[in-house]
Length: 75
Image (cartoon, rainbow, N blue to C red; front, side, top):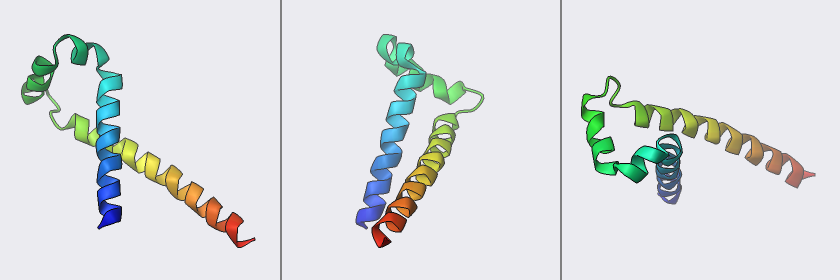
């Protein structure tokens, strides 16, 4: 359960950071209108889709580091 909670926090952090980085000016100037615009966007699910893609990439990198850490610690 702790691991699931940690992964949800990682996913949510990636979601928030990527949305702020990609749409910084919109979040600063008109955040409510920016959120409402998702309802008539041609891809309203794109924030979750892009977050999932970034999450998978981060998970692969984390997995590689974990594997390297295990290999080094066995020596």
